[in-house]
Amino acid sequence: MKILVTGGAGYIGSHLVDRLLERGDEVYVLDNLSTGKIVNVEHHLDNPRFHFINDTVLNEPLVEDLVKECALIYHLAAAVGVKFVVEDPLRAVLTNVKGTEIVLHYAYKYWRKIVLASTSEIYGKATKIPFEEEDDRVLGTTEVHRWSYSTSKAIDEHLAFAYHDKGLPIVILRYFNSYGPRLDEKGYGSVIANFIRQAMRGEPITVHGDGRQTRCFTYIDDTVQGTLLAAEVKAGEGMVFNIGTTMETSILELAGTIKALLASPSNVAFVPYEAYYGRGFEDTRRRVPSIERARKILGYEPKVGLEEGLKKTIEWCREHY
Ligand code: UDP
Image (cartoon, rainbow, N blue to C red):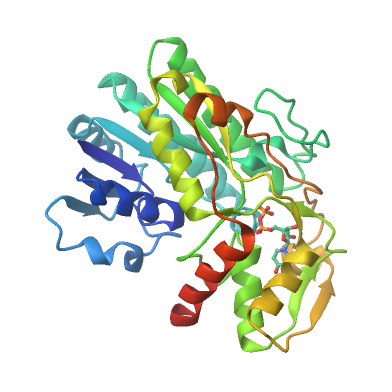
């Protein structure tokens, strides 16, 4: 099948592309290499079933051509990562809203199934644990840039549902803290990349706040498994799914585990949020998905535990950081 992956040179996108090519699909990657990297896909450049286009999803005529050419679209191109969004909120909002608007417009015009990457940020700072897909969203003031990410992705979801009302087959995935090989070394959007780099260098491991905030870290294979199922299972059309594990880990525990796995001499250093994100930052205290819907409808089952996933990630980081 001919498949378009926007953001296919990114961290999640490139792993998805690996799997699609492995199973014999022909893959078109549209990526402007803003956070994506050519090294993530360069091992495919000689593959005649792989096509790389270095451009943006805001280029409408190009998006139209690609959508027309392909039978299925995975739309992963976005400004991702809280740190990026906080640093360049204008680009984040524009890319996420306009880009998705354009891709959906042409998916509708040529009637192509589309799997849309969303985020656990959607739930904001909701306190009802675990987060179920139909739960209310709880966000802070618009004066705090962090919430623009959640809001822009929510507009994307609304748009997708609106097209689904017109009959377009869409599926939305809310990814929960994915990690694995190819995480950006700078640690943008990933505490795990940051901690591994710091621990490898013997630098202080910077835990924000009191470190008791939690996340459910999801190994990339489990993220990709959910993404592939979303396109395959017809019953999932018109729905949104949480994709992640349900193992809740505090950031402080994570620091300890990474330090131990690397036998690192690093100390844990508690730093105020403001030192990293600037003033007026708000964090999500606990983030835990319910994955019952994905289990029941998609047959999704995450398989990789945190230590196992961290070991594989560390192995990759040792060669690349
Ligand atoms: N974090 C941290 N130290 C770092 C980077 C991040 O303590 O060097 C914290 C961050 O404040 C948040 C959690 O780790 O509470 C997860 O951050 P990440 O950027 O990985 O993803 P988020 O869940 O915020 O999207």
